[in-house]
Image (cartoon, rainbow, N blue to C red; front, side, top):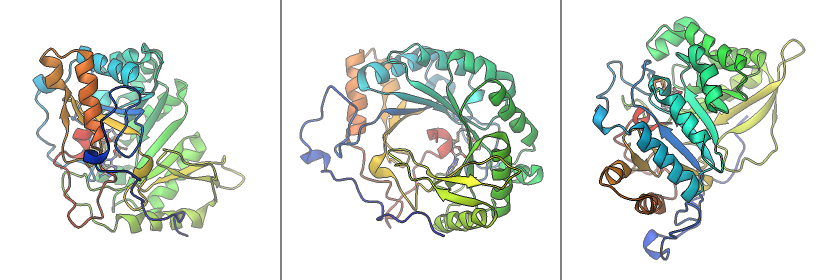
Length: 359
Ligand code: SAM
Ligand code: SF4
């Protein structure tokens, strides 16, 4: 069984920025390929309390100095510009670990005040969620993704370099109790993650009504351990899942959603559910990408893999008005490349690791 066959990641039809005519100064947030960006990913901090092997080195990283971090007021202003002037409809808070950001609830509440009100989501490792799930829902959180690669405690400790699985499970439980739906579980297919890890994790997710998404590892790990076999690992994991579950491919069109979905039948004793694969590298969805990213230090990145970024923090602090910030954000997105370019022999991994960009 292979992933659904489609033509290889087609570069979106488009033109070089130089030939694309003038950048629109009003209307949706577009690039030269006609992609419209409505999904804003905001990294609230680059710090983290885990050290996942596919993301951070054991010793951590040099954290962004505090004076460089956006203040709560700056963040709320930028979200307002995004929603009211640029057509952002979805905001996802991420990190680093966003639950380490004290202003997370305020940021969620600030997003919930905007009109038209965006959908508000969180990607988290779940540590501390047990204490804060209720407050986050009260602030306006709609959806959550909790990262979890295995339900085997020793293996979790090996992958994340911290023995904290019970706290993640308590966080998931609290999110369900607080009424957050859907709850998605993200598992990165690090080489250490086996077919058995994912089969057991899928059983766990089906029993609890969580939707499992497995994610192909991307070359954004600070240790530079990624290798091109990551795509083959995805196929092996899917084969392992098919040996234990009956999967029916979900025929609904994916649109800009990155996950390829299957309906899962696990037999009479386990509730049916959903399983997804996000194969960002081997089955790229760049042609329908609708994401724009804001780092914790106020830089706009037009792609996870972009070599450059645009400094909105400097603009804000120099006294720029909303119009100037809007146009700088538009210019940043206008130059977005057709695709991630990972399969290009000249590909260079971005200097910023995943934890400082926000996945
Ligand atoms: N700390 C939070 C968490 O782990 O959910 C949010 C930040 S984390 C950088 C965001 C997402 O990126 C997580 O789902 C994580 O598993 C994923 N991720 C981290 N490193 C990755 C890599 N090298 N390839 C693919 N996904 C990765
Ligand atoms: Fe931390 Fe998330 Fe990176 Fe793991 S994936 S080290 S939890 S930022």
